[in-house]
Amino acid sequence: MTTTHARQRPALDAGELQASLRGALIRPEDHDYDEARTIYNAMIDKRPALIVRCANVADVIEALRFGRSEGLPIAIRGGGHNGAGLALADDALVIDLSAMKGIRVDPQARTVRVEAGCTWGEVDHATHAFGLATVSGVIGTTGVGGLTLGGGHGYLTRKHGLTIDNLLSADVVLADGRLVQASEHEHPDLFWALRGGGGNFGVVTSFEYRLHPVTTVFAGPMFWPLEALEDTLRWYRDWLPQAPEDVYAFYLTAEVPSAEPFPEHVRGLKVCGLVWCCTGSEEQAQAALAQARAAAEPVFEHVGAIPYPILQGLFDGLYPPGDQWYWKGDVVREVSDAAIAEHRRFAEVPTTKSTMHLYPIDGAVRRVAEDETAWRFRDATWSMVIAGVDPDRANSATFTRWARDYWEALHPHSAGGAYVNFMMEEGQERIRATYGGNYERLRRVKADYDPANVFHVNQNIEPDRGE
Image 1: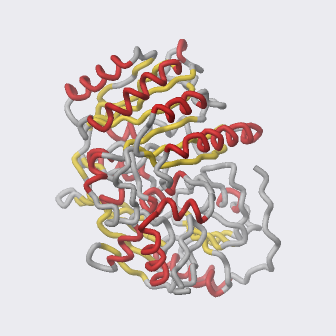
Image 2 (image 1 turned 135 degrees about the vertical axis):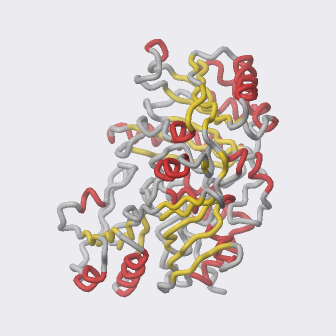
Image 3 (image 1 turned 60 degrees about the horizontal axis):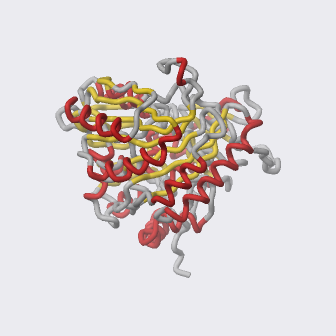
């Protein structure tokens, strides 16, 4: 992707800001500027005016005050995993939270307070010591903030709901510089909006989550030859909704990596398959595996009892920072035979790291009402992502075209909207479709907490100005 950089703006007098910070202020002329503006998706190449690497909440408040006084766009960076690159913007002031790493587990209350610079791998490490975990994604290097504010789903979702269903409170710096705590009892409208509404309402500096007893899980990949896709996906779409909530498996198409633990005879093979996570008994897991084997004979299995953090980091080595990414998503209620035919048509991925995943979002997710949080797809079964990925920029046009074409073929079979964390910059129509009946309430909350739309470098919800 070719990025056209914004015009050169006059040099900012940031001396007063620098003096007020405990963290680092990084300017375009500084030696670490290019490193500081690098995020997970190497396709993103944006040049902020200033980057404030905040050490604490006071730094966040000072950075926001300065950015507003100078008329700078404000971007918020946590883990930097956002596929669309919305952690950065040209000519913006970036409030970088990545140095804010505090984690405090309360094993008696089964809660954890997490600062916004943490990754899920860091959270899992801290909570696993107490035999506890909360719902997160499937890559340990993902930041807690972006995943949570978009809704958050992962291996524990069928059993314990979305990440936002386990969010108890959040500390938020508002556009006017105030620090508030949002929960069911304090600023409840803001708390409602934070649970799925993205970074539209303020800078969340810490999150408090409910934890669940999770230690060892029965987990790992199972692959079938690509020729078995129609049979196995048809079986999976019928089996998954009836499976016990302790049994989780997401469906994928991929190319087997040329690395351990994959044996030589399957490396480079185009496959479909499942990645399992069973939190119940081994007997329950083995029964589910037997049903999958009956659908078609696998070409590879590597499923066994492992510590939960190991599963959470399973993809970290395969997808390190620095790859080129282009992804599109949709939420899916049912996988029809016509949709299966389209999946088969696009199933041969164009690059080794490209993939399609169908993540289950049923089970416990459905025990929350559609209007109880900003995330509305409580009647859906899967969250789909089609991800074109490769380390080589020269391949970006190929995998981008594949992802777009694949998505366009499947979109008519979807619920119409998406998990916002699986969206590129796709426009207001897609954002409205994603929030549906909750969109107008989100606009009203936005008008209450950010009427000037200071926080617009995101999947933006425009404030209701009563026009």
